Image (spheres, rainbow, N blue to C red):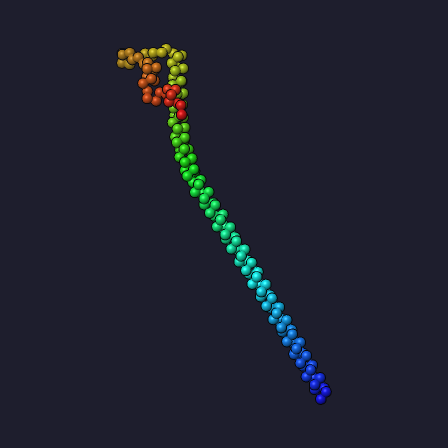
Amino acid sequence: MASSSGNSSQIGSEEDLMDLKKRKRMQSNRESARKSRMRKQKHLDDLTDQINQMKKDNAQILATINMTTPQYVKVEAENSVLRAQMSELSQRLDYLNEIINLMSYNSTSTSNHHCMSGGGVFEFDYHHDLMNNPWAAAAEMLQY
């Protein structure tokens, strides 16, 4: 019987060993699960922080847009006015250059030209015609 009691103590010892291994494995699994939950929570916290930072950045960008949009509209309107003025001044400059060309042409010939048409004489006074033209520019018209 000594062998049967030795056998049973061996089985009990194996069961104890198996039980110990099972408890160690369970403890290891619990620790792995705890670490996994901690990693998951840290990842969730990081994502929450990113969301909050992005919300802050978006609010700042929106404030900047709201502040600069009226300035942009104002500058765009001023540019439109300046483009129109530039176009008008360009036309006036072209007209004044025409006047200068006519005056230089007029100074090389006589001031009054006579034309014959159908036996009649017509007299053209270029200086008088230019002064009556509504597009004739004066110095005060060019000051902007």
